[in-house]
Image (cartoon, rainbow, N blue to C red; front, top):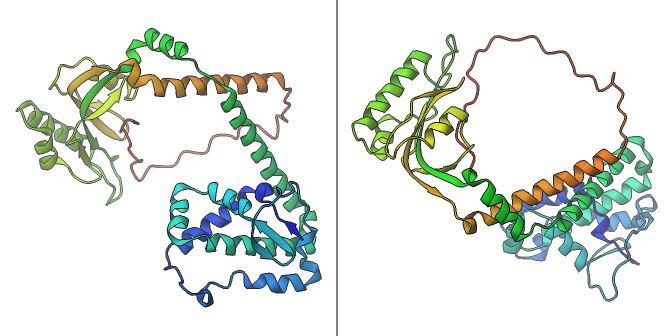
Length: 344
């Protein structure tokens, strides 16, 4: 008897378990063993079929001494450590579902995975070129991810480096509190139902909103009077933006306007955008240190990867990797999606 180690489990297996738990989470927990799903029933039958013997799968990592066995499938045994590892790799949402409803769906899907993989080996599917390529691709992806995480773990950023960057890039830590106004446009000739306003209508609407703000209108009241879902968006509450988060002209205006002033409309292909400034502040080093440490570490990681890449000779077939010719333009019948909202 052997313990089947999940340390050789591929990402595809984890995806299978994620789907299983997600589907299970939509159903109530079955209180009686007799009511459990029948996913593990094929395991007994598989053990009786010579072609489906699971013992043919080679182990890469032997089980540790004294590991508790929590699942048996045919002549395979699965340890608690193996299944705990699988659960640890699931998303937080799925782990919460497991915590609420139990680990049974994980065990059932893992058992089914062993049955199917044993059948695949018995049918020599692991020898097919397509499956071998897929296994090798997953192996490469996992090794590359492991090395990336290794590089990240070895990359250190000192407090002195954080302080130096902060002191030499003060403008990056200016923050403005703004109300953003977005009036979505649609092209002339757009089909009926396309969200947005025609260019002249959009400009007229932006002028109306500007007048409402100039008359001392509160942002919440202006938003209530002029907001139209998927057409006119006005922030009723201010949002914090940093330099560089908005298009260049609008970004410049946001940090030059006086408190309470509204910028001129900034025109994009999809919308007219304005901002009203309600306040400013400069982030202190303590407020920015975590963000800076993360940013500097990522820069170092990318530099390390670039150095590795530069030391390796790579050849590409120019014909195979040639850039395809541009596609012929097609008439636009619908306005493209607009998303001028700055990333937080």
